[in-house]
Image 1 (cartoon, helix red, strand yellow):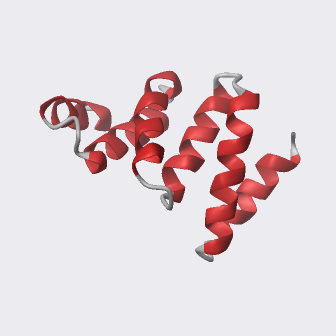
Image 2: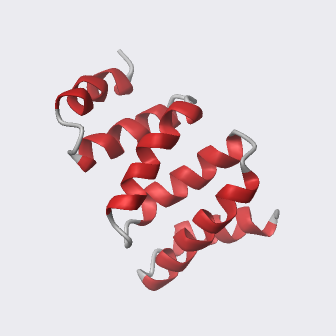
Length: 101
């Protein structure tokens, strides 16, 4: 069973549960279903201004779908959060991704 199959019914039952939605978005991203992950990750980024991880995944999913112009500000915001929150590994990954722009 795919991990996304665990979270699809949970999100359907409780669409406002942002942690279920994040878990679904992350599972879809990990399964290579980047287009399906985008709306869930977007909703997560809109729910909290300080939530770094959904921004990273959203930006990377958008890059995978060729949405580079839309992804760049999201990845830049994620980098700012990573720096502020002292998450060194994500910050390094984001700097590397943004260096390719």
